Image (tube, rainbow, N blue to C red; front, side, top):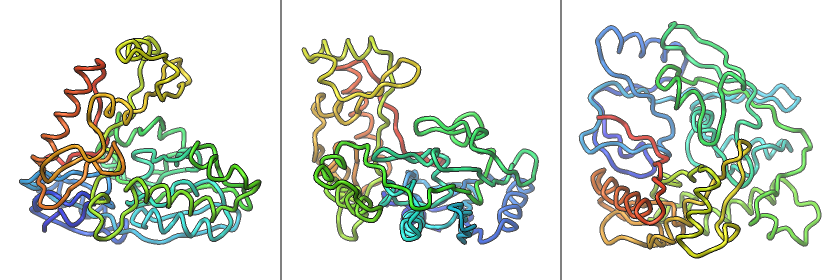
Length: 338
């Protein structure tokens, strides 16, 4: 089964074995089959944050297809991991519940959101997740993990750090705010609604989609800028003295560098700013993989790209930024090990 079509970047080879899980019983059966046969297992969701090697995957790819959205009437939604994330966000907005309206337009499935602690425009899923139901490959049982159990941090959780590959998320429970007001903490949204005292959830969501579209971060058929894995590099979190050093390199005041304070005294610096200052601007590149013409952080498949092409541009950017600022950027998308 070819895997390129299951990802938003559109590169990669085939899986030796492939199965789609529609139920939790399917998940358990796939895990048992792989374990008994000594076959490697990879969980595939919406493919929006995934890069597949050209040689594909020599194992079993388990595609998550568990559907269903259950609502308890008080803003609590129990959602199957295979549900479309953006479809779920739009459904929530339609019920008048606030909490994830700024996360509209993000591709992928619901099950992937707690893994990366998906966030954008002033919101993170960690703010609304009550619990995560998952299959524990260690115990062979389904478990319920609380928000605290998940240890959410910026773009991190136990699912992609300390317990990577242990859990397979099957359902996620969210607590949203009935009749809540929308979040307009993000600067672009504040400017958009400066003269609007009380925008609706739908208006804020539409504004977010327009902003994402302007940056090539909304999937539109035929738009090469949207053939990407979203933001390719994480915003680096560094000690404050590193910010001072970076400012000195650019002969700037620290406040002139886009950054945000972190609770532990460190700061998060804009990766996009670092790329631009190092010469990696919008449209950079000459081959089939280039930086988006509308968003500095997105590497895009302009057609006919392969995994090696992505890796070459990634390494060029990482080396260039590190040479200029002494900061080594981390890739955000996951790479499926061949």
